[in-house]
Amino acid sequence: MVSQTLTLLRKPPLAFGIWLACTAALLALSGPAPAWAGTPALLLGLAGALAIGPLAGGPTRRNPLAALLPPFYSGVLAVALIQALLEIHRVPSGLIPTPLAMFQAAWADRALLLQDSWQTFVLESLSGMAVGIAIGLALAVLIVRVRFFERGLLPYMVMLASLPVPAMAPLAVAAAGTGWGSKALLVAVVTIFPTVINGVRGMQSASPLSLDLLRSYGLEGLRTFAPLRLPAALPFLFTALKIDLTLALISAIVGEFFGSPGQGLGFRIKFEVSMFNMPLVWAAILYTTVLGLALYALIVVLERRLTFWHPSMR
Amino acid sequence: MSTAAGAGTAMPLKRLIGIWPVAAVGLAMLLLWPLIAFLVNLPAAREALAQGGCTGLYACASTLNSPILPAPLQFLDGAAQMLNPLWGRSSLLFNALYTGWETLLGLLLALFVSFFTGTLLAFSRPFERATLPWIVASQNVPIIALAPVLVVLLGRFGVQGLLPKALISGYIAFFALTVGVARGLASLDPLRLDLMRSYCASPWFVYWHVRLPVALPLIMTNLKVAAAGALVGAIVAELSTVTFSGLGAMLLARYYAGDIIGLWVVMAASGLLGIALYALLSLLERVVTPWSPRH
Image (cartoon, rainbow over all chains, first blue to last red; front, side, top):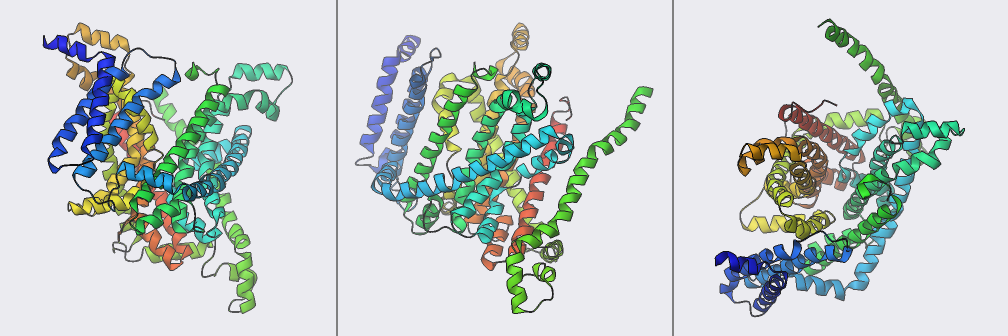
């Protein structure tokens, strides 16, 4: 009898109903927010989370939209639960703002935050990344071509890759001023090392047989890079690009803490924390996260397009 | 036996030959350092020369109060000053150890939590589908903003000192560790699993004695990757919380004092700390997984 009920509960339409009911109940609870509702809210959250199980299970589907559904369910439920718990426990907005307050601030101050995003993402991160990746690729070609540098330079690159970035942020600002240039410099320095390490690994992954074939065509040395070594390095370079992106955002934001011309997401976070305007702080964090994820997704799409031949993509 | 002895004597020579380019590049960098410092500091040195107080352009460039890149002697002098009472509370060594301890504590916390999430990810497909995208997304959240909030929050419950910083450092390490645990636990050869089934082994036994040993090398590799991130997290946390010890606090103090030589010294110290952490974890890796091949 019990097992029969459980199987019935595992049917997707019913599970979806439970999830929807739990989410709606949580949102309804957060309106009046009575003090006794703490435990019921937690139980509702648990029930909703368990209902996601049957919704997210099932066979793997190729449809990319279907892959977005489970995180959507868990995300909406988590937002509703946090909203309800914060309202019920009367947490002051200067400590942790409710998710709804965060979304409101993100919409109301969109002009300000978009300007900050332009400063942090385009001027500082992307321009710095372009310079850093160009230098990193040049160094990688040098290391692959010249055996002496492979032995002598690569160990230093591996060592420098473990350098903690924020230790350099005050130095970059002190040396290169408070404008966006100092942050771009920081980003460029930080992105060099992962690019070199992965680039060398990738260019060396070209198979000796293919190199022999190219030699039989009369292509040797530097001329093997365009047809063979660079394409072979692409999967590794995309890995490097993902690491670079995370490092670049962190260093640009930490760099802005030490000095910025009055804009930038890092500056906004630091400034508004000191004003206890937490909804705007979390809105700035939201912008960073969403834009960072969008760039990450762009990299993944490019990776699928350009390295479709690699075994890891099939 | 004799071949082993022969290989043993051949090793040092081979190693020496392998190491000379590293030494050569290092030496070249050391020799280039004064030259680069001179070129970088040239504009400031011209000004100092015009004002008087030093003789010769090179002497001016290597005795500036706030050079962009300090000359070797200035750097060593600064390092010696910051190490002066070796075990004092303002000493570089004490603060580096403090930050290192925070990082290790953060790694330990992250390891503990990631065992739960990693196990869930490896064994429950719905859980993986519903939470993995969010775990990936959490990597892009600038944790620096969480630091002051966390300190205020935890302070209300009487938690102070190391723990808030260790939590932030653990937060950064969490992702790499979770992925390592999940992938390691899932990478079991199905043949071994069949063998265990034929022994009627309990799932608990399989987890502890088969899956975990298979996962350990990958977990240790990811622990080393996570250590670099955790160190960044610890320093960032020290930068943005009110603290009086640690490399981050030293950085902040040197920055506000306008002491660029000090900044370079602290930066070098944090680099050394990163290398020391890596070496420590490599040692741990050899102890924990003695069967995996040495690199």
